[in-house]
Image (cartoon, rainbow, N blue to C red; front, side, top):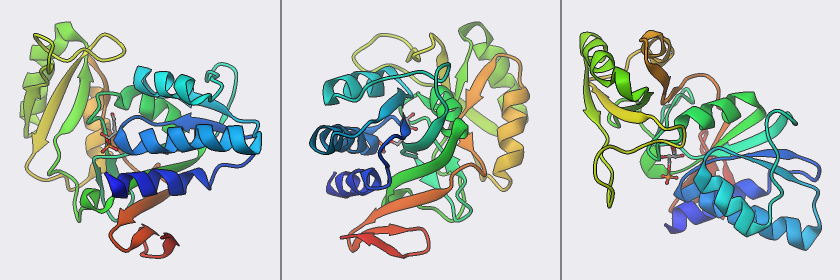
Length: 228
Ligand code: 5RP
């Protein structure tokens, strides 16, 4: 948890007064949002946040970050976590079932910063299953399509809630394990072609920078030290 904390905190330094900020979801962005709220108070910054989930919406409210929407503002910078990151800055996201709104917000940002601890860095994507948000009525047909593409789908089940996880948008999540993902950009498009798929968790070619929490400090992907 300490690595996530120092990574989330380090990303706050990239936010400038006057920015509209995309607020990612998860335990690493939790620290980013918390610290951003502190900075706004201490430095009297003029910041607006655009949340990617109910989780980040509630946390932003608690942290005193004024909220706006994509209808009203463009995004200067988005900061979000990831479940896997490869050397070409391709990502798998959606461990928190929030990848649809995360993709909308992160892709819309002028600058998209990913915050992860070092356990998320991989040579090739695919150890983590690809989350797919699916319209409930299409769950079986999407599963059949996914199997034809070589994936093994698993309906994500709730914890302390009977039945499947329901996303912020009222849909199901299939976690799809692929043997290996050789062409993330291709697979991202292929999965979204399947009728009933709302969005999948591959984010190819969109991250501008990855900030990594390591036991030797916070670094970028090229191993340059950013903070200790
Ligand atoms: C939520 C996400 C998260 O950003 C991702 O799961 C990483 O979370 P954490 O920072 O808790 O490890 O994509 O849908």
